[in-house]
Each structure stands twice: as C-alpha cells, then as structure tokens.
Amino acid sequence: MTRYEIEEELDKLYKELETVKNADEETVCRAFNADSKQEYIDLIQDEIDCYEAILAGDEESDCDEWDAHGFANEADYLRYKFG
Image (cartoon, helix red, strand yellow):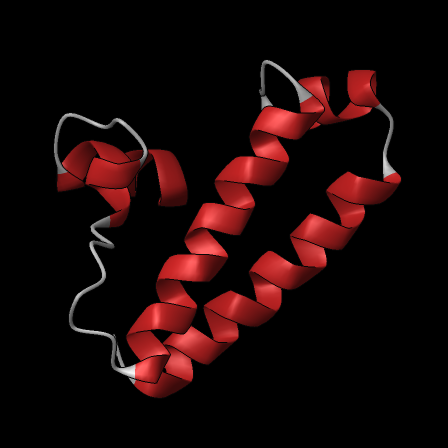
C-alpha cells in the first residue's frame, strides 16, 4: 500500500469509528455484523493503530491485519474486507 492509500483508509476508519460511537448497540450489531458495539470499536481502533504505526515507520509493529483479527490467511481477510 502506498502512503496515500493508507491515509485514505485511515480517513474511512475514523469516519466509521465516529459513526459506530454515535449509534446504539443494536444498530451497530445489525449494520456491521458485530457481536457487540465495544467489540467493533476495538476492531476499528486496532486497524487505526496498525495503519498509524505503518505511517510512523514502526518496524517493530506486528500489523498483519488478517492475522491480528483472527482470519486464517490474508485471502480470507481480503474477502471479508472487500467482499
């Protein structure tokens, strides 16, 4: 991913995080297929943290998105993320 693509993804994640924080529990669970609002907020925040670490050049960060979120492999994660 290029720096521009990472920044674009961060913008989307921050907007989604704001939407989720302002929604009620039932709406979040239904709209985002989540078990709980807090779980989904944590998931978004983990992604934000990873992207920010990548932008900061943190080579120590372990930010394989698919691995960090419990997917079997990167292909499963990409199918989930982009349909």
